[in-house]
Structure formats: C-alpha cells, structure tokens
Length: 487
Image 1 (cartoon, rainbow, N blue to C red):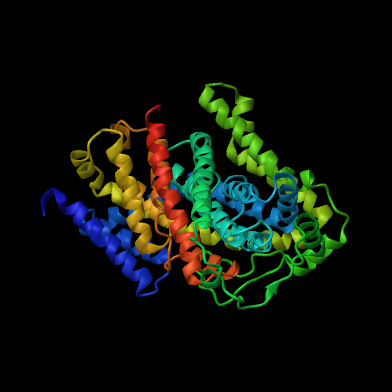
Image 2: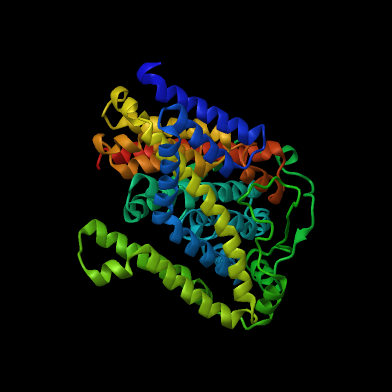
C-alpha cells in the first residue's frame, strides 16, 4: 500500500470502531482503546510502542484538562442544586420579552452555563424550556426546543468550559485563553444567526404542531420546587412549569440517571429564605471573571506572576467551587454537599475516561505517520486544512453520534502538521468542534433526550435538533473562515 497505508489503516480503524459501538453495542471507551491498539500494531509500531503511545496519549490529555473537568463538573453540580436557573430565566423573560427570550436562553446555555455537565444541564433546563415555549407566541415550543439544542451542542464543542472545547485545546496545544476569546463570540454569533434563520422557517410553516409536537410525553412529570414554579408563573403567567422525564430514553455511559439534586436537599432549599439571585450565581461569575482576566492578559502580553496565577482557569474554577460550597452550606441541609460531591465524582469519572481514551487514539494516529501523508497532499492555504478538519469531524459524528469523540479524532489527524501549516491552531480546534456538530441524529443520546423531555415527535426533533444544529455547524465554519482572514 506504500505511503497510503496509514490512511487506509486509519479509515479501517474508524469503520471498525463505529461497528463496535453501533452494532456490537460495545462501550465507547473500550472501543476507542481497542481501536488505538489495533491501529498502532497494524501500522508497524509494535506492541510495546503501541501501548506506550496509548498510555502517553491518555496521560497527556488528562494532564492538560483532567482537573478542569473535575472542578467544572463539581461546580455545575452545586449550582444546579441552588435552583437559580429557573429564577434566572424568569428574570430574562420579564426584562427581554417573549421575542428575545430564546436567544438569551440559548446563548446563556452555550456559554456561561457550560460549567454544568451537559446531561445535568439538559435535565435542569428542559422543564423550563417546555413551560416557557407555550408562552412566547407562535411557534414557541419549537423556538425554545431549538434554543436548548443549540445551546447544549454548540457550547460543548466551541465554548470554554465545554468538555469538547477543553479536549480540543489540550490535544492541539491551544491555550484556553485563545479558545475562550475566539470560541465564546463564535458560539454566541453562531447561535443567534441560526435561531434567526430558524425563526424565519417557523414563520413560513416549517413547524407543524399537529405532527411535530406529541400530545403527551410518557413518564412522570418532574415537579419543580414551589419557589421556582411560582417565580416562573409570575414572570410568564404559566400555570405549570413541569415537564416529564422519560426513564426509557436511550442512555450512554456518560448520561446520569439522577441528574437532579437529592429530594431532601431540594425540600430544604425551598424552605430556606430566598437568596438574592446574584449571590446564587456569584460562584459562576467569579470563575468566569478570573478566567477571562487571565485570557485577556495572555493575549495582551501582560506579564505578572500574580495575574498569571489568579487568571489560571484551574484557580478560577477552584475559587468558584469554594464560593459555591460556602453558599451551599447555608442553602442546603447538613450532609447535602457531601452527597452532591459524590454524584459529581461519579459523573466526572465517566467523562474523564471517555476524554482520556480519545487522547490515546489521537496519540496513535499521530505516531503512525498519518500527519505526514496529510502534509504531503493538503495545501498550506488556510481553507483546505480547516475544511478537511470540519469534514472529517462531520463524517465521524454522523457515524458515531458523539460530538466530543468526533472532534478529538478529527483534530488528531492534523496534530502532527499543524505547526507547519499556515493556520492558527485555535482555528483548527474550532473547525473540528464545528464539524462535530453536523447531522446530530438517532445515534446521539442527546437527540432522544431532547425529543422526549421537550414533548416532540421524532419528526419534530429532526427539525429542532438535526436541521438546526447542522445549520449551526455550517454557519460556524463560515465564521471560522472569516476569522482566518484576519488572524
């Protein structure tokens, strides 16, 4: 096969990995490890060097993003227990009105609320989105469903601290400051433009409530706290802010079954005096402010040991988590914080394993020489490498159904040659994230969760999830190409 051997073997490895996950129902983490070992051996690395590369890839990625993921999940778990998100959305509805609410809702989820693990964020915000969907005018349920899907998926792939963006930054050696500065506005603009287009489609009959909305959602309705229900009702004149959770929805290894706070903690929270909303959100705001300060200082070239320490993302998350613990001990009953931390640790372990083995496969892909083949056949112009990363990620996601795995695998193909290409590494990371958003469909756990929790038929979910997020993927690529002209 000559010099094309790495490409053929890599394509075979990806195909086998997809079959193992979809047909053999093998756990994705195990499938990734087996694929990495197979690729290393068939490409001539030998058993010893292959295993060494697998270990190194796992360890290198965990060293860069492992602690960030742990602290982020723990912070998000505590914030979800405060019941602040329902109040935040009620305030936005009062201040912004019905027309602007889906935009604010989606941008918040896709940026600042990415500290919360995706499945937890989905379960926390889906009842609110469903309740408000019927109160914001024509096509409201469709607009809120699309807003939630966009916020969740675009945020994971393009916005720090989304787990996909963190993994891409670690894999490609891109500073989190650059990902934050470029990814945050990219995610926001992508979400807004996509929702604008979706609104136009809804106005022209794209959404059919009779066929796209289910008359009833199976499962027991989630009962929000009295305080949050009253707040949402006062703001939106909504008689009920409940939505069901379908226990039969497909679950993957990283989707928690118990994403809400413990019932006793929720009851104590409702019985406790209402805390000011800025206080409940202060841990998140503190972490964001410290991280953003460090990112600006890094890009501006400000050199200061104190500023560098305080602006480090780990320090920012640690400060936010400490603040959240202080609030939780006054908001929740004794022992609730320890229980919430236990839940956070369980979620963290699942996330870390999947991200780490993705790094193992990426390391093997780089070691077998695929990057050299890409370097010989891809132009060093800006367009070709970015389009290639996007296309690979899109194809992988259509097959596997995992946004993060597709992004990591696609980015790994160009890791060895990124320094030699006339492309900013941050653009490569963002292009991989954008491509991994294309064609979310029945292989995605998030697709079925959105379909069931928001009361949509499968036909409706294809519109609000597959079509909408795929459109965002294409829009994001266009924006990234525009950014490349000035970087």
